[in-house]
Amino acid sequence: MEKLILAIETSCDETAMCIIDTNKKVYAHVVNSQAQAFESLGGVVPELASRMHVDNIFYVFLETLQQANVTIQDIDYIAVTTGPGLIGSLLVGINFANSLALLYNIKLIPINHMQAHIYANSLTTDLIYPHLALIISGGHSDLVYLDKPLHFQLIGQTLDDALGETYDKIARLLGLSYPGGPIIEKKAQLGTCEYQLPMPKKDQSLDFSFSGLKAACYNLVNHLKMKQQDININNFCASFQNTINNILLYKLQLALQQYDVKQISVSGGVSCNQSIQATLKAHFDNIIFPNKALSTDNALMVGLLAVNYLNNNQAIFKKQLNALPNINVEYQWDKN
Ligand code: KG4
Ligand code: ZN
Image (cartoon, rainbow, N blue to C red; front, top):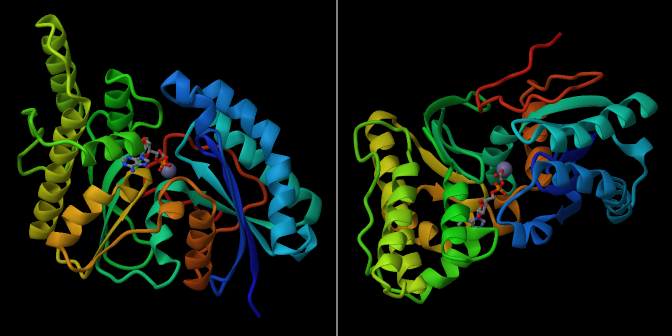
């Protein structure tokens, strides 16, 4: 008999819920994004994000139950993102989950948001191991090695800015709106790589660094402004996009020299970028990407991770949870 899971995600600026069963049948998938509210502000304002989660969460819950045509009494487990993320945002989803679990006597499954991004790729097929996962999101840029299911080893991470954050900051520098990734991607398609940008951390380390590239972009723009020269935004975006493609390709090739893997997955908000996808697909034939709705934050990836834990008999059950805003992809809950 399949079990029914209500999954909840509120780690940043999406209030999202889904209902999925242990056979990966999806009954409901609702994402309420606050991105539009932050468009003119250039990024997420944490206090506003948590307030908006409070306003939205009950309606997202009702819509999710309605879409699935079930009641809360039909739910066997609640899986909720517990970290990493913005503490105020996380607490809204966690507190909602805690209350439902207490009222209806439902088991809670804590979810690591970074692990969930990886398992967004497991909707239609299981991942193949040994597996290399590249997570590129607004808050993280991680390379993760999995020798077997649900066994995460962080082998590379950003030493400064995350990749999505870099897209967002460069967009702001160019006077483009938030989130920066989609708009830079669009403009890059119309431009040519006219500007010279440095490729940071072209060394033997699997870590990333994007602050040097960001500084070079700021310097170039300031230099052009001082010389009263116009910046060709499309060409600038094309040059930036091309540099990012080269960095990701270089680091994945380096990781493959050190780790024997059967499959590579890319996930996180930046992974829906078509230029990145085309570059990496041209070099690796065993590489997978989630569909667009599963690349940016959503609750289906939270549900999918819970399904993987349950089906591997590795799920941890809790009666009550609290936020862990700073955990990394390796963090696992103990049984107590
Ligand atoms: O995974 P995500 O939804 O949130 C976090 O967990 O951080 O990622 C959001 C990030 C933003 O920085 C946004 O600019 C970036 O993903 N992004 C993109 C694209 N779409 C979203 N970056 C590059 N190209 C895109 N098409
Ligand atoms: Zn995320």
